[in-house]
Image (cartoon, rainbow, N blue to C red; front, side, top):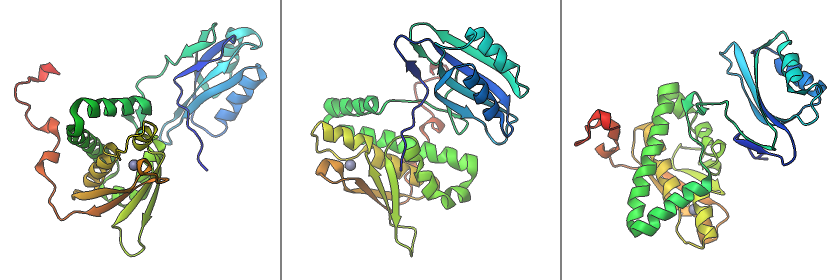
Amino acid sequence: MRYPKDVEIWEYAPGRKLAEVVIKVKNIKGALAKCSQAVSDLEVNMLTGFMNAPSASKVATWSFFADVTDARGGLSEFKKSLQSIDIVESVDVLASEDGFMVDKQHFPVQWAGRKALIMRAEALSEMLLRLWSVFGTGAATIIDQMAEAMGRQSAKEIVEDFGHDFAVAQLDELLSAYTALGYAEVSIERSKSSDFPLVVHAKGLFECEANYKRRLRQGSVFFRAHLRGFMTGIFEKTFDVVEVQCQTKGDEVCSFHITISPRPVPSVYSRASERKMKGFSQSTF
Ligand SMILES: [Zn+2]
């Protein structure tokens, strides 16, 4: 069973009074229960939100949009009641009278402690389709290199954060991050006797789904190269990734066959930012 994951960006409820609430609490057992009971007692209806409570941190933040149309005593009472709870350190509330509000209380957006960007899949698909329409078949090289670099960078950060041995041992879990990030619903298949070849099934892959909807018989270039870059970054070996079945060809899922290539890791894969960029001074960026 997979559940949709809604990221808190904005809330739209015509005719309702909304608020965005951020409660900072001690990161202890029962803190959330105490706060949610208080919110409920004040006749406030919690909407989309999230909890940020890293195990190593002494404080946690609980953020959510709320329908406060029927809030007992209004927003000032709501805030005062929450602040009076012993485990609450601070409460910030922004309000909107016209049923629409955008999250203005969180920045930077982070994923595993690193700065992240959220992009709609259709926007990324549009970008790729624009490259295809401008550069024709040449777009394949641009997209391939771009995605390869992205995959490599993701792997590099994981190795920096967790170490190489951990990354190799947790490869299947890490590949599931493609699901957590919304690229596709990923599942992994491999033979019992060896780690490779490895097959990654990607159901609902954003790239091929977009091509399929537009009746294009173009399989994955972006995801395939990202996967290759990711594997290369984790193992420091060259990989071949072939899409052996694809939604654009009528298959139910896109499947990627991954093997270790006998070729050495090309030097072009070294980080561009580590190479001297001729003609640009540091201040240009
Ligand atoms: Zn595909």
